[in-house]
Image 1 (cartoon, helix red, strand yellow):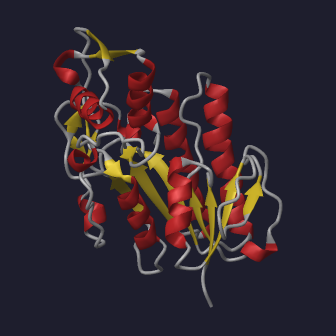
Image 2 (tube, helix red, strand yellow; image 1 turned 180 degrees about the horizontal axis):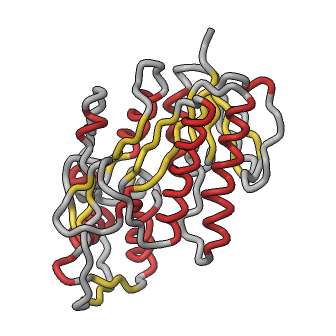
Length: 287
């Protein structure tokens, strides 16, 4: 019998890619705040800040929790969307006998550290509301694993990129280039980052839904690091636009991950950020 998957954040950058990757593995249902049907995938419209009603057809599903609030300006939104929503989904998963719960967290739970790639054994030290809320979501997920035997996989995601507008820092830079808005560049162009391609993220999920994949926490990042300034220059080349830059004497640490633990499971990042940012000239209008 084919496995069943529930993917939250179905309309998002990560969730939509994960849904598509899983289609060949089993029966996929998406969940989003708004109905956003994708070919061949039914979608439940629901805000997880409130408990999800029973869904008998999803009994025993593998749950992949991609939904998150990244850009809220107030703590209440981070709390309800990232902590309360995760707790509600965990409780729903327990009551529905979920085969596995896969949580997307962030490398931001480590905070910034100059010149160092963080490992899963390093202490958490988030610096903003988003990082704190995702770390609390991790804590709740681990508690459900310990209390109820729910198999939990946590992916600490680093700066995903891919085709389209994307999300996070790649979207921020791309939007600033298109709109001509100002970007602030810190001393030495920091922070340095270890971005991971969207297709490699989907590959990691395909690995993690297999019953033999070990439950636990994994950094999900690329092999190569790049500074924020290098990312801006690469996006300039990719889009054929010039950035409106202000250079400051501010500085910070870096946000880089060590993916050795995930590599030990057989996963490899195969799409380097340097390839993504090669210049692609705009298509010419047909004569």
